[in-house]
Image 1 (spheres, rainbow, N blue to C red):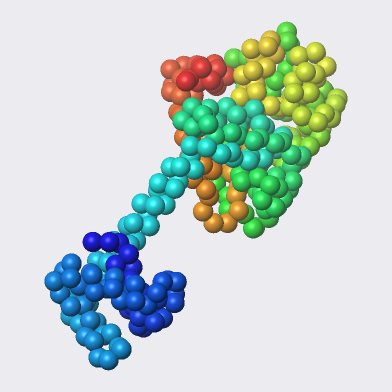
Image 2: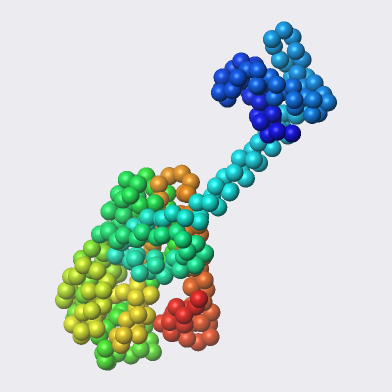
Length: 319
């Protein structure tokens, strides 16, 4: 049986006759009629009552309608799956990030994707804030955007990835009790380096500090995380940095402590409405899975008695 014969059969039904069906499928009427007759010969059954030029389904034809539709739908699904498989072999994904969700973090989360699909290029760009990331995604310049939440538009679909924990990172050899969280109320007078473009994160931090009756001493406003970390390592200021970067800072000699109360910022992925292409969809799935594995490893390490920083450093070593 030729799959086109089922397509012709259903077209005659859906379009009310051979002429309209042939026009809709852009085939000759004679070819369509021959296809339907070939299907009838295959089944050794008539499928239509023929009255002049009109075709009316007979009982046998009525029995075939739903199975034929299912066969064609299954074929389309198979074609979509295989098309997706082809698209996952080559190509690129354009991704936008922002200071609060840095490109370094996204690169870490993408490791499992790049291992699975080494021939797909990841084009990663960092923008100034959530609005810029969302604008780039809306304009089609980026397929995915990793951003702090909430976002400044309702025109994008969102996938929340969780809360990003901020730790206090202080210059090397700072004298501080590392066995207990640092009380933010004691942050008065401690010089801080903040990112001048991490606006939503700065708002969250400022809100927490206000509740603790702390007026932050801003020693420097810098354009990115790396500049914050450089000032910390040079002894010029402290900074509140995400857990992943805090572990890097610790390895470089900085003093890292948890805070009381904790500071957490929500983040996730945005994209234009509608289905993602297979490569982008797989990237979202793999990134989320990598985050889940990392958090699970941290939780397991903490249950064994390690601090958050120690647990995170062990989790960072996972393949």
